[in-house]
Image (cartoon, rainbow, N blue to C red; front, side, top):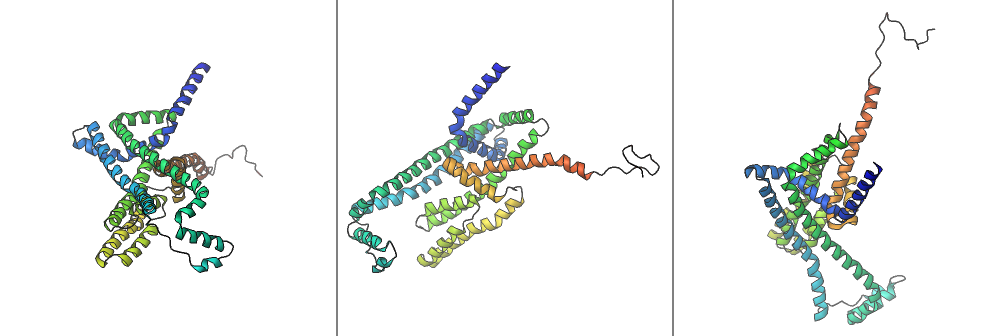
Length: 364
């Protein structure tokens, strides 16, 4: 028996070591598979029960929907850098001279004025002076770019892996139910159903709404040629998932539209951006009233922690995992408290008028 436990523990440890680097990717692929399973079921029925073909079609469409917007949003970070580099090389990047009032700033006014004046006349010399300070910043930005690239690749691989899970969805569902009953014969399957319902609620509600807002807002800003539309689209997506809302982006964009564009163009962009904002105000209460009871702080912590731990994939995995843990924990606590509450709520039966008093009752 002890040898068997050692072997099982050894295999479990090495299995964890092997799949740990892909943990977030696997979780996200499971989330996608659970969220897309109803679509798979309907599409497979329409195709005459061909579940594998339905899974392939869903995967292809999902990849197309992911690659296009991600490429466009990624270019939003690359193009400004290229423009700055080209400006340096061509000498088009000009810094105006500093106002004389800068000298009057307390403590650092003289140093800022001196550096600003040098940058306005000889930018290369000014940058050479602060190169040691810029190096850590550059390394940090390069690290962020590398992590974003790796996260995007993991995201795409998660979509592909979810296609494999969808192809074998029926067999996997049977296996998961058997495992749940094995872990907890009484309530295991109920917990599994609760986890699936929570994944659906978060993925379709919080994430689906945020992605819809980002698509509508991004399309409007792209057509209106808003500067930095790629980055602003990402900001709408993140603010939506974090549950802050897109108003921080909508308001400045609408202000820019009315000060820059023609009246018809500004009106069109305003309608588009207000639609994005009203999605948040109208649809979100409906979502939280129909099936999503996870508190907003839990989702917020999941987003921030997920990004810090797993980058792009963590943005989507974090809130789902914490929401599932919250709902399962709440259900387990409610189940533990239920017998106590029931016992306290059931009063002892009153003795019959002519019955003999129980032995422990003292008669005065």
